[in-house]
Image (cartoon, rainbow, N blue to C red; front, side):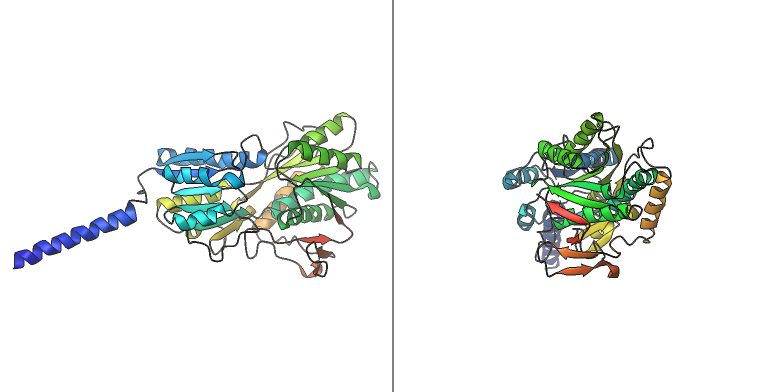
Length: 397
């Protein structure tokens, strides 16, 4: 009888261990194994936006070596994203990074609970009611927009003080995909940075209606230049505005350019002042480490956590200023740029504050007094400021 109980006990233990193995570790690579990591991109490296993500992808391989196997799918349309994402899952990816504007990842996360879905946050996607393996992230890019504006403002100040520019001509042009909160937050931070040193400045935002159209972006920038804007920046994905600025300068027009996603020094050397970008690598690297260690992403990645959503700015190197054109920048610009970045890291810069009134685009009755201030990215990594500064910013189609 004792022998019978002993055999039964051994069998039970073996069944239990087998169950744990099959349900727990079979779908989770050990720390010493190879983790398959998937990337799903809306575009390819020819656009600065996706090139910025691909840089993080390459860094992942450099850091982890054969501990990771990276699989990527590029030029994926949101409406056609399901099959590429399912393909990566079938190939064994245990974590997917997605930069598409689609809610597909939220639906697939419920179907594949063993896969981590990490998506650059979208304003139309809430974490409420989503699966526990769905996560969002984004850089607090308004900080870099403000610093870029400061650099542009110092150039305007130099032109104004020298008499090369009249106060009424301190016009800033901004090429934008749309009038979303992401765009409005960014252009407002940019203008507030400019006006901190050149309060004469006003801004015109001209939309393209799409995130990535080289020809439209170039056309909108050229229009703004021809209509008198002496500073051009963008919240779109291609280098079209940079080319427009360089072409205008070759014809003798006075214009300076602030880039996005990558340095534009090589394509616009006579107009490019500086570029800013979101550095996706701290999140991507941290999320991969979390999956390798079977730990929670939000407990592993340093940043400002909002549930299963994370954001960060200069403090965690999530946003960066790229190469400064010292030949064009006003004297003292580099020192001012660096000191302002340090002030952001110390939490001492209050961007959305001043003697301004903002009016919501979606509800004209919704008015904000910025003398009381506004804290961006307080509750989510997706920007939320969507007020147009009365008398200082105009939105144009």
